[in-house]
Amino acid sequence: MKLFIDTANVEEIRKAHELGVIAGVTTNPSLIAKEGRDFFETVKEIGSIVGNLPISAEVISLKAEEMIEQGKKLAALGESIVVKVPMTEDGLKATKQFTAQGIKTNVTLIFSSTQALLAARAGATYVSPFVGRLDDINQVGINLIKEISEIFRVHSISSEIITASVRTTTHVIDAALLGAHIATVPYKVIQQMVRHPLTDTGIERFLKDWEGAEQSVF
Ligand code: E4P
Image (cartoon, rainbow, N blue to C red):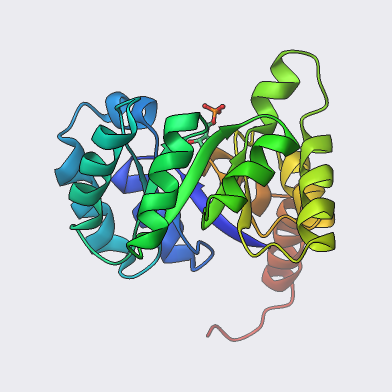
């Protein structure tokens, strides 16, 4: 399973990219708004950091024609741009058009496997089921990843599943075990994935023992 970073914060993207662990970036209107910067400038700067890795940037309109206009402007920023489209009838129409024009899409705000199937059939490059927001309403979000993975496997569907709305490292483990192609994770979760208390105490003990052994320094 690949990892994308879910943020519009360029410093977080830079740090995660330096670790060599991310294969793409996802943003959404809330994440862009949180940064308080120009949308297009932000997306361009993200591109300058991650090179040709896919960057999902979302349209704002709810009408297919306007989504297509906005998506084309985003796609003009570079080949790595993936136009993020909401899971609605207009979103599906726009996805079909983008696919016909060779523009990659990420159909977002997916909360059921039937929505994922429709998005895939409209030609979505990626589908984004939101596990955390399902957990928020007392459903088991990760079960959706299981259903979609199985449906896509059985029917040889090539759209990639991005496990989104990831809040915990357990979400990441479960998504990987269940066969999601990608998990898009906040920087905080990447940091949590790095750390383990036994790694910390292990390092401490190695260094203490080394000091006591009076070895020559490197
Ligand atoms: C995915 O592409 C979305 O940007 C994101 O994962 C939403 O996460 P949230 O539910 O924590 O806002």
